[in-house]
Amino acid sequence: MTRHPHTHLVDVVCSTCGAAFTVRSTADSLQVDVCSNCHPAYTGVRHTVVAGDRIDRFNRRRALAAT
Image 1 (cartoon, rainbow, N blue to C red):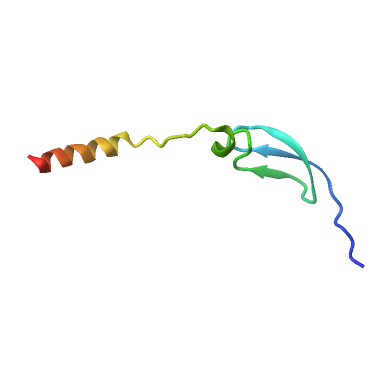
Image 2 (image 1 turned 180 degrees about the horizontal axis):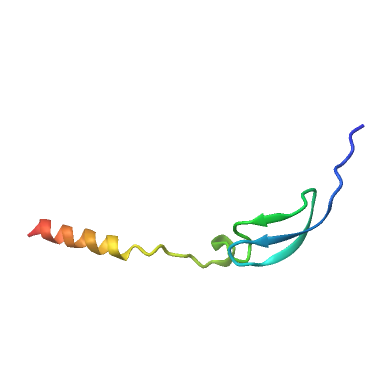
């Protein structure tokens, strides 16, 4: 006969936004990188990478090559 592991309430902390919530787990503590409060798939907000310098540099080289 197998026994179920003992679970207890654990506070989970998101390292991105700092949100905390409680779940039942066998671990002593949990820390997640992204939670449902800050994940783009749940919030609908996309974080764009700032790559303006690279794009500007590419466009300048392309313009120089065209002339």
